[in-house]
Amino acid sequence: MASESELTTRSCLVCGSPTTKSCSGCKSASYCNDEHQKQDWRSHKEYCLKIKAAGTNTFDAILFPATETKPRLVKVPWKLVHEDPNDPYALSWQQLDNSPWFKHPNSAVKSHYIPRWGINGRELEHPLCMRYDDNFGMNGLPLNRCVVSLTKGQAGHQWCGNILALRMGESYDYYDNVNMEEDLKALVKYFEEYNKVMPKY
Image (cartoon, rainbow, N blue to C red; front, side):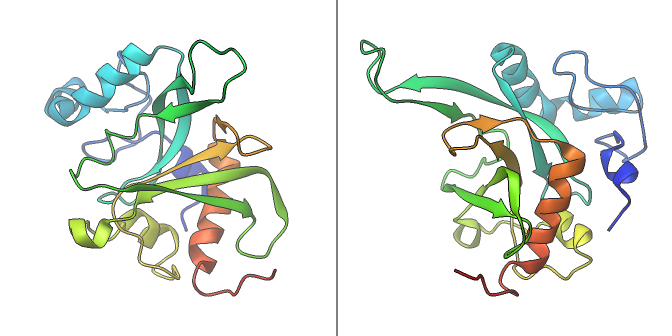
């Protein structure tokens, strides 16, 4: 696995070069020069406009891109949904907008909760939620190169398509912002042990 500093350094989305420049619209996509930003605009436009429209209603998440080798921090738009808008005591939840990363018309985005370090390790102070397309086989999604790279090909499961990871609140009721350095380690450990280590109940 690459060092923490390598994984948390911003990289150009076009060429992968280290950079300190970011998109002025969403502040989260990085490019090494204006030419590369213009070159990537067609694929970046949808995400950028959603982030600008969401304003402060976004969560920081770790994206494990299917076609890249390094994870990166992205912003996920969300809105608060009320079961009954006329009842202040009715249930409410945070509805995430996953659409920039799960585009297949038959996508079935599933939440997979990670409460421990690896499979049987200590309880995480901040449980994690991993979101992925459960219809990856039917949809013909590619093997996730990022997970392969992070685990040096030793992952216990063939994860396919894009994967998003967010933090959960203590009661699993709400999402929260990830901490790239801290949470990435727990996620990589989970990728390494999933399907290889039997859980203890």
